[in-house]
Length: 326
Ligand code: SAM
Ligand code: SF4
Image 1 (cartoon, helix red, strand yellow):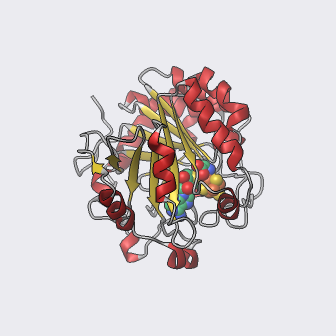
Image 2: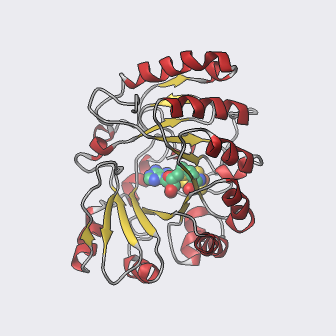
Image 3: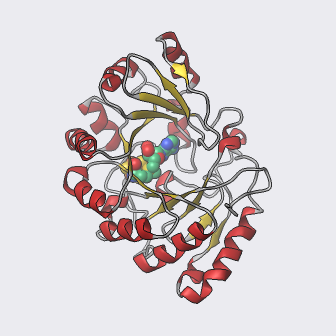
C-alpha cells in the first residue's frame, strides 16, 4: 500500500530523478546558450541514489525515470541503472534522453535493467532538428530508436515539444512514422520557465490545435486508465503507434499528477513549477537515516499544492527544465 499520497487524493508511484544538470545540447527553449556549470557541481553518487530509491520504494514508489540535464553524460549510468533496478519494489526503470549517445550506450543500459526509453526528438527533419537542438545528430537518434525496437524495450516514447513556426507542420510525417512503429509520440506543449519568456511568447502553441487535427484524421482519445499520468493518448486502427498530448496549461492537468521529482543535488521538488525544494541529501549519507528520510518525504507530501501557477505566469524555482529534469 502506497504511503505516497497527498491531501488531494493523488498518489505518487512515480519518481523522476535528475542525474545531472549538464547537457551537451542547446535546445532553443531550454538551454539556448548551452549548459553553464556553476563551479564544480557534485551530483548524487550511486550510493546516495541507492538510499534515495530504497526510501521511495519503501513508501510504495515502483517506477523511476532517470533524467537530467542529459543523463547519458553520467559515466556511471550503467551502474546507476543496475543499482536502482535491483531495489526491491522497483518494477520500471525508464530514462529520458536526447538520444545522441543511444547507438553506443543503449545495449549496456538494457543489460543493466532499463525497461523504458523516452527520446526527445522535436523534428523528423534533419535541418530542423539541428536548428532546434544546436546539433546535427538526428541520424544517431533514429538509429538509437531502431536499436531500442530491436532490443525489445517494453516502452518506447518520443517527446516532441510543440513549437509554433518551428515544427508545427509535421503531423502528417509523424503519422507516417507511426504507421508501422509501435511507439508513442508525445507532443508536449511548450512551458514557460524563468529563462525562456520571450521564446515562449513567440513559439507557444496550444495543444488543442494538434488535438483537432488528430481527431479530424480519425484518431480517438483512449479512455484514461486509473493510474495514467497527465498525457492524453490517441490511437487509430490503421497505425501501430500512438500519440500522447501533454498540455500543462489545460484544465485539470494537475489532477492527473502522479510524480515527484528529485534534483541532481538531492532536493525533493513536489511540483515542476513549485517555489520550494527540500534537501534530502543530508539524509542520504548513511543507512541509519532511512527512517528520518521516510519521515521527511511523507511530511513534505502533505504540503503539495493542488496545481501549478503557470496561468498566472508563476514559474517557481525553475529557470529551465534542464535544472530539474522536465
Ligand atoms: N536531456 C534530456 C532530454 O532532452 O530528453 C532529459 C531532460 S529534458 C529537460 C526533458 C524533457 O523536457 C525533454 O523532452 C524536453 O524536450 C522537455 N522540455 C525542456 N524544456 C521544455 C519546456 N520549456 N517546455 C516543454 N518541454 C520542455
Ligand atoms: Fe539538454 Fe534536454 Fe534541455 Fe535539450 S531539453 S537542452 S537535451 S536538457
